[in-house]
Image (tube, rainbow, N blue to C red):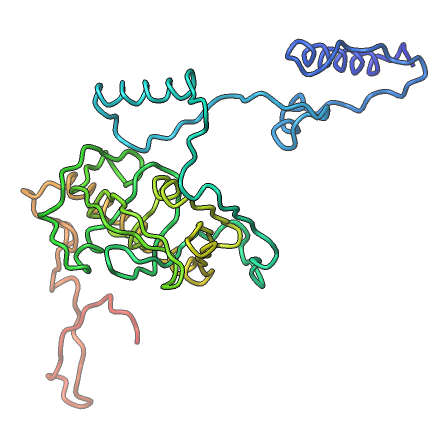
Length: 333
């Protein structure tokens, strides 16, 4: 068996992989193969990369990251503001306080159990968390809980429905990259409104700052990380609910799969309209309006000739003088 060329190739490949794993910190050096040991399984054509990308390595060791993918979510602050942020972060890391500085509501325990489980979960993991909340004194049924960025978004149509003038917005110091289609977008301004979760018997209220954008959207507002931190929110994206510590116990705010599905369908319509608008803008820029369109007009060599393109047809059964002209290439009825 040791003289088999295939066995020697496989044996060398296994030893090479074990040596590489040892150099990267995944285990010890390669061990010797027993004399009567069966041959190792054949290696895949791509050297095992597909297996590592799927379930990790077989040794149970944590694989190192292959790279990093960062998300741009907000415009860069001023140099002075950035320095203050860096100093604050370094102070917390290098010189922590002698006693912990607990946040409000941090003494409440938030738990999930099967009592929170919906009767059925369609399309597991595909439904966005869309809830109802009272914002600025108005009940809104399409509040998206995203937690993906550090800015809360409110749309101009929502403020118009609330009879709030867009001229009284405070100036904004940020812009958006990768959130809206096209280039970077600058908000119309910002506004601070009270956001309330819960019922009359048990509720929480916080003042939240929103960036106002004049975009069409399937949502009334989008609440992000600042709201999660202010309310100490604990979401459950599988059950489509979130829990918030309240003065009279834990506040549970539930969404619905039907509401999430309606928002998804409306988003698909909006995305199609964005695509059509972009195509129209492209055609508008590439069209020369000084030249009249030629579509629908006959070309000179295809001009109609009554002598060639018509023929006489008798319309009276006995009078040969009663005729009319018809086009020769008419389709039969």
